[in-house]
Length: 470
Image: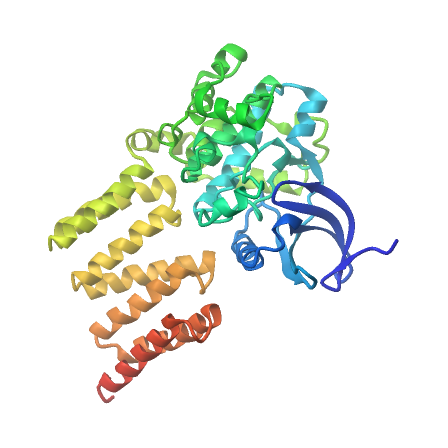
């Protein structure tokens, strides 16, 4: 039997796994002579006219992320046929899933569970910054490698936007696994970063107890328990779990997202303080390898020589207790209302103060913080403080282009507003040059017939006509 070749170079060797949304194969790249993983959407979704473009768009988002806990994306394409089948070529991860760890060892040592969970939380912190939620975190999607690194798998199919999800779930392709679905998923409400934290909490609980937390005779029974049942306090099940870690775990399992930790970073800060070496597991055969060496050097260069999560946590503990994403969202909405009443100074002062608190806690490039920074730049532009707005937009453009690339929606939004501010300061030449680059990028992304392309073209024409002679 001849091997199937994808994209003229990727040889499919064997199926590694299949779920409700996709299939993954071990493959071999004949050009670069390396093992790979090739992912396809589930055949049941192949007849959906929008699925191929959605799948490939999501592949591009994942390709823009770079993190040691995420498989690298190498390529993407579409196999011809009826129907066409999009595919994603990714790094092949050689390791053991958390499911297999439990089957082999039963409940794991507390420091090991903390170390595994801290790595998973670090990956979630990176993806949540871009508003990418996993939606299907479970032991089989978490893998421990021989060098003690944890990889979070199956993001490529799980990040579909909330828009039109009912079309896929109604065909029997549920986005999520009942035993690890948060109550808001079960009830069809908005998926948020805390949705992934709930699933991670269930994974950690299972690693500590050796037993699946939410089970039942049917998916409907499990869904009902997710909404209405809370597992016993982990401190009663595992008295050796430190009190801080036990409180964190039970808060991750809160039924309301608002009652869970504020972020994956907050989860990481607690877990990393209790973490021990996963090298005690026999599956870790390269605990002194290059990855461990790099991590040790990174820790050695923390500020003032402090261990991760110690001095940093002390500095931010009171602020983290009193501040949440909800506070940031409310501040943005309140600033907008105040500005609508023409009280720009008050709106700017309030939003600036909240962003100053949010940046060190959530990160300057966190998606919610970026939204607030963009709104802050917008308020400065509306208040005719064009030099301050230019500085803010430029900073956003520079930072976001490095992380997301020049075709990101917010990058292009900031570029256009930056050009408008440059016009008000008399820099027509720079504004026109900026808009000309943006015109090319917008056409490349959305197509020549998109109204945004013609709007930018008309704006360039108006500026050329109004530009004073040099």
